[in-house]
Length: 352
Image (cartoon, rainbow, N blue to C red; front, side):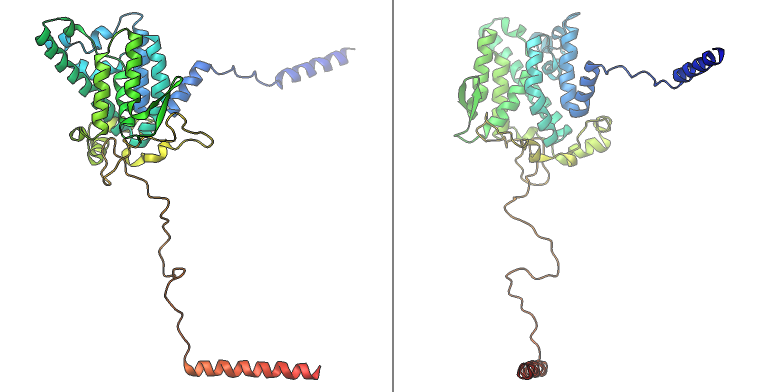
């Protein structure tokens, strides 16, 4: 019995030592979602959306819109010019945050992959700054005309200042017969930003002046009325190499200008159709006049209907080049050999 007890004890000890280590705990779904978001989203789009998230949660403690919104009285009278640049990146409402992710996530990623991070960042900053400057000019003009101080305390903020401008650029060069679906209605693509503006005015309970200016700026940008605001790709490359963007260009998710995919970023996945646009994809960001393309101007892909073949010493099929003709002596020799073969074949047939 003692021997059996010793054996069982040694077996139990061996089993305890050979047990597998415990399985790792399941991954945190929030952390996994954030890591996927960081991995799959380019830098400028990611920073823009993260600014919306940070300012939204910060609004529970202190509302950042008071410090960052473009309010004419504060921007001009107190010389707080930083509001002109930062006001589009403020969010203090959950619905604005939700629709920012729904609307800006896909379009922002495609645009940044198509243009490059530098060109896309310049584009959204240009839309925001031009919209805010025009809003300030209009507010002070109406203040001097009407004498109402309400124009000086109106505010311009939120990512929709950028989004509506981008949508207007996309739709500005749409074909006349193309349409987009807005809930249950089909709207001509050219007037789709105006329909969104009317919808926002109905929900907000009044006409939104900054959004109207953003739509106008987007149309002007798409119709090439603001060409002087664009920066060449050569200058952007120099900024990424040794200039003001060198720190950002080394970060994960930054897409350099030479690595931008151009029109291929707008290729729909297999089996997916662009029902909202009637088969039309935006071209205002991909119009090129040469290799030196600025923001909103990416070199066109080569026409797939014009195949290019490798160049070499070979002869083109159907060409006029002929094989060299043999000389008379060589021709006579070949004829004699053929006659001898025919005679030999005839003799073998007779013998059989």
